[in-house]
Image (cartoon, rainbow, N blue to C red; front, side, top):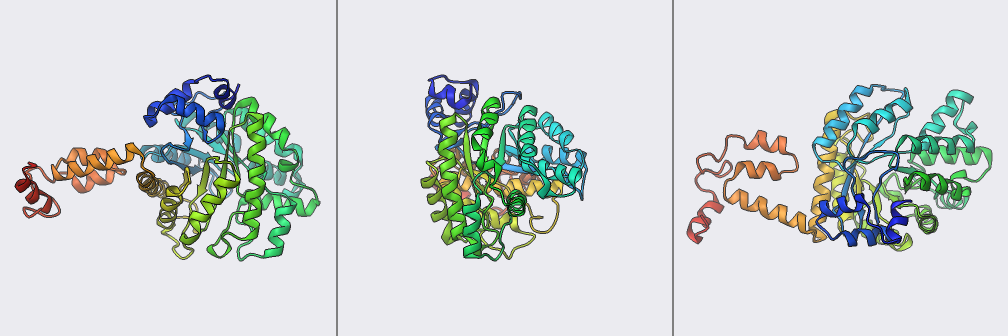
Length: 426
């Protein structure tokens, strides 16, 4: 049984109970959301998951971090340090995007060390192995693709980004409209090259039912990869992106019918005036499926600060419908991220998610802000630190302040303290 099939049968699973407790909502609300597909709980039946999370309608916006080896940097210990750093500042999930070294070993290490759900992109491994075995990505076979999905599902991967919503109709639309940045999705590029070289339809679209059978077997959540996402603000909301959304909506319906949990990935580079339209279109076309956004990056001209660019776009996207934010680090567009980059990326995404949660009326978010305001007035340093998104930085700046009832920022002329005295608050 899958979470979806259990939910539709009226069964409340331990994962649903845990999500309801964490979110402080009624467990029946979670069960109903899973049953109708507006909430997913990524959790492979082959994995003992310590911290499951719910993603979707009525729940706190979640944050995903990325790790993984590459041909340029195969340092598994560094990746494990990234996992520890990201979990320490509150990420809700990881994706292992390894494309170099021992990909299987890195995945298994990630699954063993991460306490939260872990995702992957199986086409990466299939493509890299095709290069090693046959000399080229375009020599990859459909069997290679499905073997990678099966192997990673068997290992315990909780959710998979799979680019099934890419077909020849989408590519024809892309060629017709033209783009500044064409295809920036790595998985989308691999499949596009394969399709055009072999003049064959995308097997992950053409044999979608076969894919669903594998995912259902292990209750892996399908994350419909956005192969056609805009890689620049100039390409936002073009015909190719919209065509991809339409195909994704059709596949969401088929996944739900099969009892497979499904969410949808989205852009990408999106100017702020396109964000609300993009979110509403996706939700409408995809039947309210949880929306997993990659950013969104509100401008193209801030290399080195793209974690901030993404937080600006992500806060607005979350306000108007996004449910799951993939972090962007300061190294985006520049190079491979370090542990510090990972930490900064998670923190920026969590700030964006929390700001959006406030705008959406999440009671836990509002209570946290209220407690912080009261702690500031009371000069309760420890309380302020405990409520901070980045507790380490808050402590480094607040430690030793306020001990004598004096505001560290204002001194004896603190406006809040003066007002509190005359209003009888303190």
